[in-house]
Amino acid sequence: MKTKEKIKHIARELFNKKGFKNVTLREVAKKLAISYGNVTYHFKTKNHLILNLYEDMLSETSEILKSFDYNNLFEGILDAPKLTFEISLKYLFFYVDFVEIKRNYANISLKVEQDNTDRKKGYLHILQKLQTQGIIRKELSDNDLDYLMDLSGAMRTFFFINLNPENFSDADLKDRYVVYVNNLIFPYLTLKGIEKYKSYLLCI
Image (tube, helix red, strand yellow):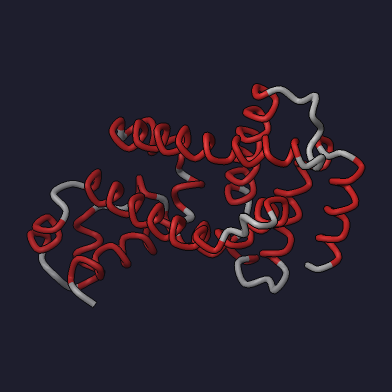
């Protein structure tokens, strides 16, 4: 592993454990037994380091979601939390410290907002198709679907914020997360959608 990757790896672990505010680049250097200058050669500031980690998280998420089942959109939507769960745990501090990161790093905040906007456009198209397929209630407006997506994002963040580190190794943690997130969509489903959702739950 190259020095740059080692720095990111250790920084991510420290951010997850202690919170990004409580970790300095000097501490990262000390943990790696390298000079502070060696760290700042690769990342001039903590801002640069966090932005780099955020871009890594996006890249890993995009790679995982390439397996999204577009031939079965509803199952694809329901599987999305399962596919991204490990990545969310890997970059836990982005969820736990989200408000602080937005407050302290304007460039990261703007990038997160733009990425969320782009992602929601893609998911809105999928939700509209599910309406056409009779899975999601047709009377729901685009504003209703937009609200659903915002609420889903908030619930995912809330789950990780309230997750006790002692539970990280729970065998059923991923399944609990998937059900927790996906139950949100239940009130928006048609009878056909409800039956398909119940069948999906039986396979978890």
